[in-house]
Length: 179
Image (cartoon, rainbow, N blue to C red):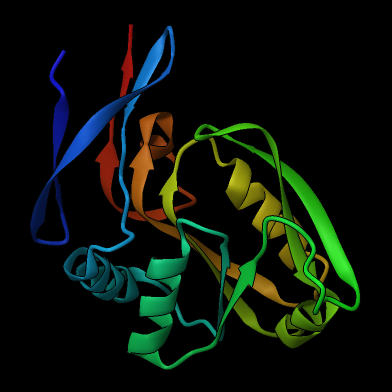
């Protein structure tokens, strides 16, 4: 098997390292951190595909660059569900999810004030890669504790079977390498 996977997304090409997840599967590691050109291009392309929205919701940490850049380009606010409760959170609301790239369960937390901020708003859920949909489900569960409505779920890439989903918006598929 090759050491890298060639990805074409948002008019750019990147070589992604192939990483072992377990004895049966490898993934191509897509990391936006530090790649400003890629982040800006993906944000612009995703915004063209998204419906009208009022606020962006993402999960800490890999979705942050994309969500921030989308918010910057469109001038809309964004909220990050954190990996654990923080001291500034007066009323933390916690959800557990499972991710293909995180061992075991991970926790996502929003302060209730963020949920109140989303009340009545159209919410765009953003992540860098959608794979199993665990993080999406957790974000939607958090959003569901507001009176806002999730109007779309989007990511730069859809990994594996997620690329067959019709309920998400993404720019390019990303294969899983099964063996």
